[in-house]
Length: 225
Image (tube, rainbow, N blue to C red):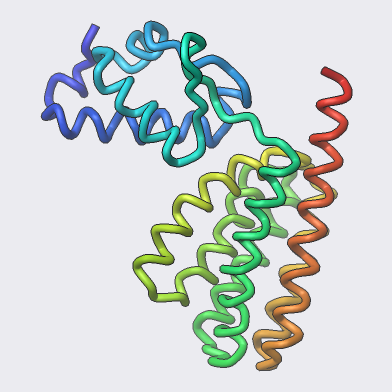
């Protein structure tokens, strides 16, 4: 049954709305990795016909968030260790360039935003607000990416960011977040000091640390299943 919201939108707006809502539900693990995405259930959930659902699933397959198999239908992407390595290799390339640029410019506005982010991350963690801490940690990356000022890279970052937020659910804990915040702080100190090489090295070490945590959790989950 159409929802009041969908009744007021054009077909193109409905397609985009369904895509964004389903994308968000996959990223935030409303649909767990490997969970079937059945058209009938999705049409009921979003109050639309099957056409925008099918188109959204195809777009999400292109984004790498959905897998569609003949005769088996669609399911939320389940990451393998190889997938995580690819995601973090791409992340390292982009973020290393970001921290090098930030260190070379030593822009006090950027440094200030990064330090404010670290303070917000710590405050959320003190309150045992893991959702708030996770959001703040994601925003740290967004501040860095903003310095690229490249529309093509921004599009790549948007797609990559969806995977990073999704895999960020793996190995999520107060202990892991605390380590990441400390690592972020050392990166910002290097940026503020204008040391591009040190910021680059610290960033790469941080990403390896996060990847190792997520790979270990993924291995445990696979062993238990």
